[in-house]
Length: 362
Image (tube, rainbow, N blue to C red; front, side, top):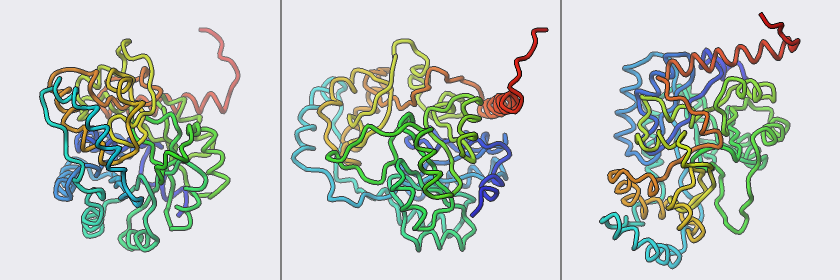
């Protein structure tokens, strides 16, 4: 499919990232879509029934296109049980501190993938994206018959080639600057790389596939959106920028932490989920990140009660404060206002690019 088909989905080339864990509420998605951008629900960590209800809610809020993001199930051998048990023992002190039990690690690895696909094919939404892997060609063919536009998150040229061959309509190119989980298709610590910056990755993927690209990674301002459009993207995906909106379901402590001077930097860590994810560096990340094994979603399930207990106790030092590298630029505006402001900033930046002559002072 062409770039035009992707751009037909929105008035502004702005995509609100799907943020699993509660941030991407129907209210946020509906407000973003109604304002002329593309909003995304996150199917991750939800039951198929809950996803169905959230889709209904979004449809009740707007008639504009929106998307649903689906986590691909793990295909590897799974986590080392011995390593998980060692980490469980290490976290015993946290469980005692927050007076809660640690979670069970055998709650399933596929996140209800097949049942969610069934819902999305039976009652199609305009866009479906995939993270942590690439579906089989027959899955893309089924969505094409349903009239659904498909996007695959990629973090390398190799992953982009895989998505192209399988039949994806577009790619979400995720740079290492992005907040939350890195959407890489494989999670092999023996082959772990530091990651590639967004602009460099965009250039490589653009020349690799020719598919329409959505750029993601630390973007917070309209001028940055203009930069990735100039680098070949058809649209920009922003997550942290929308995290502080009142419609976001992020915990109030998480929203405040984005601009709190106490949190000076972000880092990639396995401490909370067992998969590399970027968040604000806090006590939990410092103390446990160096020892956390590769083990998604087992570690996610193990630490879930701890993260909830920390939030209930008002302790941001024990929470997973996912955030991109541009988090200090967060603005707590209503989602519709934020879309309008980003669009205005983008328009100004594009005008300046077209006419770079300095303006005289008035």
